[in-house]
Structure formats: C-alpha cells, structure tokens
Image (tube, rainbow, N blue to C red; front, top):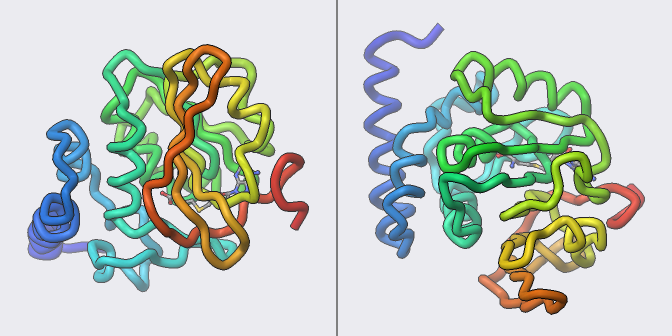
Length: 220
Ligand code: SAH
C-alpha cells in the first residue's frame, strides 16, 4: 500500500519528470504536457519498480514487455497532433499508460493488445482511473481494428519492419500514424501523414522498442 507521504512524493517526481525530461527537451504542446502532469504513471508500473516510475528510461512490465521512457511517449503523443474530437487507434496496450494519456486528449481510444493477461490488467487500471473512453481489444493489431476505422491518429508502440498495410488503410485523409520502424535492435521513429492517396513519411529520430508480432510484422 502506498502511503500519503509517498503519494505526495510521486506528484513531486512527476512534476520534475515533466519539467526536466519533457519541457526541457522541447515538448511544448500544453495539452500534451497537462496530460503527462495528470496521469499517475506510478500506478502503471510493477510493484517492485514503483520508485523508478518517473525515471528517464523504459521499465519492464509483464511478459518481457516494456513501458516506454516518458520522453518517447510524449514525443509520440505530441507528433500524433491529437485533437479533442479525434478517434485514435493504439497498437500495443502494454501497461495502459499511453492509453490513459491518449484518453485525456481525445474523444475515443481503441487500443489493441496481443496478450490477454496484459490487456486485462490494463483494463482494470483504466477502469479504476475512470478512463471509460478507452476500449481495449485483444487481438493482432497489425490488422488494425476495422470496426472503428477510419482513425484520425494511429500510434504503434511496438517496432516492426514496415508500416502494416491495414494500418495505413485505416488512416483518415489528413490522419497521422507514428511507429518505430527498423530491425529488432534499432529503429527510427517514423511519422506518416495521409494526404489523399499519398503517404508522406518523416523520421523523428532513433529509438528502441519491443517487437510487433503479427501477420503484417514479425512472426515471433
Ligand atoms: N504503450 C505501452 C507499451 C507497449 S509495449 C505502455 O504505455 O505501456 C508493446 C506491447 O505491444 C506489448 O504489450 C506487446 O504484447 C504488444 N504487441 C506486440 N505485437 C502486437 C500486435 N501484433 N498487436 C497488438 N499488440 C502487440
């Protein structure tokens, strides 16, 4: 059980994370900064690692997966240019932290997770925090989620060799997709913007994510 003094300490660590890791490195969207100020990241971290929740690196979650470094999550979120009325698709729910951030910023979030155990843990957390505009679907996110398509934004929080075709097909005209693309060791964070039938691509820098496993990515 976390005590009151620890909760106060967590708020202090969170504010420091926002100042030193996000604002100081150029995250300047007020909406994005406010979302990172608000979401209690420490609740999405494994018990034994809770005091590292606001540290400047990724942390392990269950099943060999990771929760991204705060700055990378913020960079991806800001690059997604989420507006209040948007519907966003997330691939790789993981801890549910990024899902919570997106829930703060848009009307509807559909998050697809491959592993059932991870998905149900995230669902419980998000329910407890009142993020009812986020739905979690268990399945292969490389196929997207056609039921709610098209999307204003798509964020993939696992790395693959290329943008899965169903994802670019489920992107609205003017929609943005952010995804790490490369091999298993190093990837480049790519932003794809749909302009009619053209997909404009730009790189946001180097990164390293866990593997995207599915029909339109790696097989294992
Ligand atoms: N955004 C998460 C971190 C995700 S880690 C957070 O904030 O915590 C990457 C997640 O992608 C893992 O949980 C992994 O199981 C999931 N994943 C990998 N391949 C997938 C696929 N094809 N479809 C859906 N989820 C996938």
